Image 1 (tube, rainbow, N blue to C red):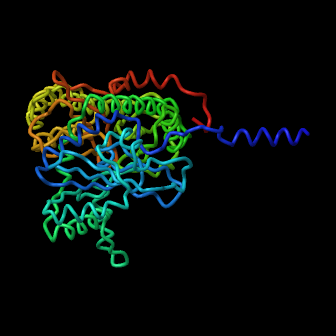
Image 2 (cartoon, rainbow, N blue to C red; image 1 turned 180 degrees about the vertical axis):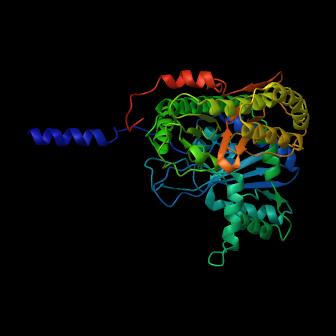
Image 3 (cartoon, rainbow, N blue to C red; image 1 turned 180 degrees about the horizontal axis):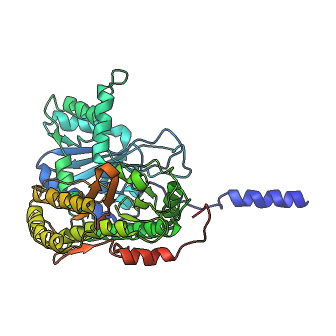
Length: 471
């Protein structure tokens, strides 16, 4: 009898209640449908009588959580694999094509499919089965409509534009591979539907929109940056001689996941001592030395939006005299650029104004080490000879986010600032990175909560866990 009761209890725990209607998966709750509709409307305005076709990502061939690519997500919020979006500039309507039935290998439950529910949930004017897509494209092509599509490789799961481009290029050049990208295949098929007419590149249009963040996007990026700071603060508190780089990464990763992040924006860059000389070092296997500086560059993927924050700090919690000298002059030079930034300013003018402050700082700073002074002079000289088109990379749906050339800092831009001071023959590399939002009145440091001043970092690190192998 007891075994029967236990079996009945177990069955109840795993069997859905009769009449329960699970919500279909496939639409992210990051923004309301109206946010995505407004973005599609801006694309329509650029298309004229043309038609844009954007394909969603395919599923991963394994037990990996599905994440939609950046361009498709930006316009739909839809997370269904192999979905396709058609934006018609002439009719001013969009059509979403969804697989008639689909079950992810790593997911259970109903997926969003064509019908009234999908139309209401997504806000897309028309939602059709994916099986009907070819006939629609054929009709549009025979009607003389000009197609547009993204050219650049898709970016998802800690992706980056430059990485996608390089991946597709290497595949195409590999004599044992030679495959075209999914984007290239789509372009060729659209060209065939259009009777050989050129398919226009849609990326610049979407990139220009993505470069200026909406208030809703800014709220999500602000939270992503808050989580990044919490993770790096945890890494600072976990640092002590004898622990490993991967343990600092684990301390930060816990904070990311505990705050609801869906993953990481990029692999953790935790570099102790000379490892920091490789800017994208990610071995994460070295043991921290008592007199090392350790660099942690790590951020979450939160509701599809990224951040990018870096701090560098002493493993034992206290800077040596030389470390303090190197770090302090670096920080003062960094802060001249930070303080010179204003809405409406061209990057080259920001640097021009910052150089005035840099020269004053260099003239009054007390150097005790000739090599540190030479490193600071090189850092200043790099700004003096630089004709900057930008101050740093944009941040948004990708850590190195989409952008187009621009003249001045515009409200809604979010970007990072991350210069470096180096002493190459000693493998010394000093760098921090913060995230900035251009508002109508100023340039706000979204990562200002995480300290950068040496004394403030030392105070934070006093609150550390007892000595031991696990952070």
